[in-house]
Structures are given as structure tokens and as C-alpha cells.
Amino acid sequence: MPTYITLAKFTGQGAKTVRDTTKRAKMFIELAKKRKVSYKAIYWTMGRFDVISVFEAPNDETATALVLDLGSKGNVSTQTMRAFSAGEMGKILSKLG
Image (cartoon, rainbow, N blue to C red; front, side, top):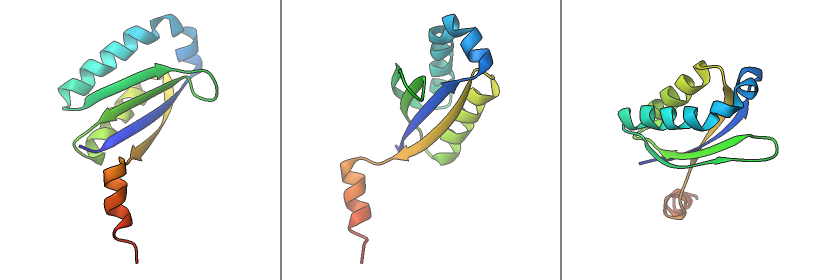
């Protein structure tokens, strides 16, 4: 399955309720499971972003719907990137001219 990395930043609402962030993460992971998304890791970070998560989804549409659902709760704004393993990147590079 394709891998995705989501960078999240607390909104004002998310910062005010930061004590609930791990509870919200657990609820999000449960939602991911229901959508056949495999959560690999979640980290709270210092710096520009507050949370980084790594997950695998069947396709871009499923990943996008999951992250849109997360953003609609109002606690974080997100940026999601499709990630490629070394093997996947090797296949991509083999298609270069």
C-alpha cells in the first residue's frame, strides 16, 4: 500500500485543548482502521509542526478523505505527502530517459 506522511500543526482550538491530543490521536487511529488504513507511527514534535504521522492507505482518495476528516475537527491544520520507499523510488528511476 502507498505510504503517506502527514505534518500537523495545532490550530488555536487544538492548542487550547492540547491535553486531549493523545486521546484524539487514539480516536483518529480507530477511524483509520475502519477505513482500512494502517497507521505506522505518530510523533509529537518540536518546531514548525506539532505532530507527524506515518500511515499506509489503499490509495490517494482514501488517504485524502482520512486527512480531510481529521482537519474538519478543527484541532489541526495538515500537510500530507506521498512517500516512496527505496524500492518504489528505484522503479520510478528506471523510467527515466
